[in-house]
Structures are given as structure tokens and as C-alpha cells.
Image (cartoon, rainbow, N blue to C red; front, side):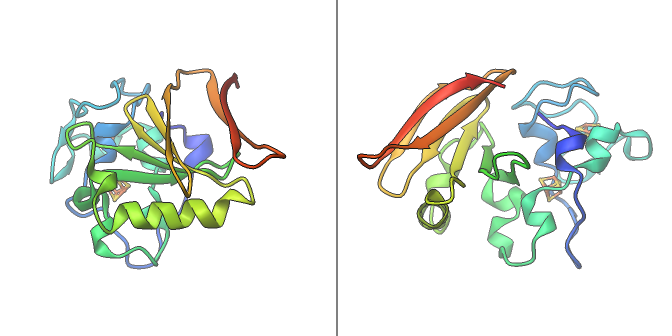
Length: 174
Ligand code: SF4
Ligand code: SF4
């Protein structure tokens, strides 16, 4: 869900949305309102927001990870990759919200290998990679992908290292 309190961010120099509108499809935006996984009724896909001047603050405040960083190449722009990246401000998990029209996009090269690399580098610090298709989540670990089912409003994913190695993965109330 787009939460302006969580995702107020500033675009990196030179980054613009241009013809990308994918965040207007993949997220639930209660302020419109719109459900996740379907184009907003105000969206002009490939062109922008049809109510740009009066769009909700939720939309105004949001910039995805591609927009706020300068190190991801053009293939990572959501209109090309078919997923929108964010970093959860509380858990620091890297979240990928995938276009349900292309649910396997995150497994394509070069993305999947990079997700695995981020998973390996972040695991020891508890910064995990979680991929969503609508509410259905997959935890990406260095050596395997763990389907964890749907994450509903009011739930969060908890990933704890086990003394014997590996991780305990479960859902908890927020
Ligand atoms: S997904 Fe990112 S680049 Fe695309 S429209 Fe939204 S903020 Fe802009
Ligand atoms: S109101 Fe505009 S910016 Fe917000 S989700 Fe709809 S099309 Fe996108």
C-alpha cells in the first residue's frame, strides 16, 4: 500500500518517471481509492496521471527505489523491469512489487541474479529481499526462494536467523 509517511523520498538527480506509470497499477492506493494490481482509473498508462494537478498526496509523495537511486541501470526502470522496488523504512527489507501481468519478471536476467546477490549481502544484517505479486510474498534467500503466502493489512513478515543456520520465517501482527 502507498503510505506517504513511509515513502516520502526525493528523486535522484536526472531521474524522472517519464513514460513509466507502473506504481499506478501495482499498489493499492486508498486515497484514490484503487486496489492493487489494477490500473488506477485516472492513469493514462505510458503517459502519466490524468489528474496530475490534483492527485492525492499519497501519489505525490511516492518515488520508487529506481527514482531515488542513481546506480540502477535503465533496465531496472519499472516500466521495463515490470516490478517496482522500495525499501521498507522500518525493516530495511528490499521489496519488489511485481506487475501481476508479468508475475515472473523478477526471475528474468539480470534481475534474479542481482536479487540473490542482495539477499546474500543483506542476510547477516537482517535486510532481506521480499518479492510480491499482489499480496502473495516470496522471501528471496541466497540459496532458495521461500513462498510465504499472502501478507494482509496488519501483518508483517518476520525473518529470524536460527542458531543452527537458516531462518525462521513467519507472519506476525504489525
Ligand atoms: S514506478 Fe517509479 S519510475 Fe515508475 S512512475 Fe512510479 S515512481 Fe515513477
Ligand atoms: S491518482 Fe494518478 S498518480 Fe495516483 S495512482 Fe491514480 S493515476 Fe497514479
